[in-house]
Image (cartoon, rainbow, N blue to C red; front, side, top):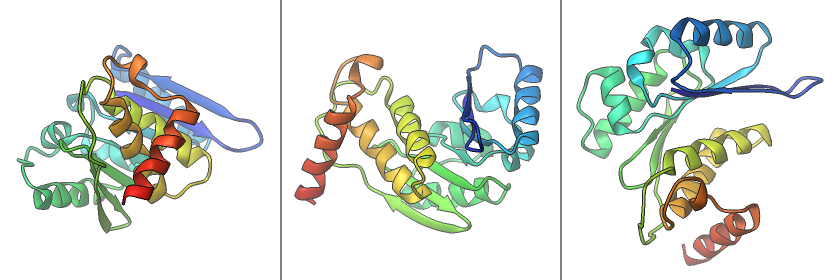
Length: 189
């Protein structure tokens, strides 16, 4: 599991963690973040580490189809399946669900409202790191004050950019590359 917590009060606080952190330590970190009214964003790369009852602690969760299947114990093969899964996850109290689709897009469910966000057509070289690119762009956008919808769109764009290069970190764009990429695809749309 990858998570980050953010406090946008008088001081900026940020925390991040991964699956190598024991569950009881993660639980303590989440509890500490909650006491400080920090937003918690979670990419459940190891869904067996999360109980559905924990979702109400999170501002945003970003599972892919496989992770959502493991969280919910249900098949997710179609867009309709993904929409139903996002609604089910949202029904457990998380503010926003960005269910990442195998085609690069995502289903956003926020307050019961659902939107399918399509990915731009790109030449896929390597999917390694695409989920992390999505989460990074989403978290930055939310911290910059963007809505979940705009943040999810930026997450899809970042993941779409990253699959055009080999590797994980090497595939992530600079800020300039990212906004040039977005401009090209907005003009083409």
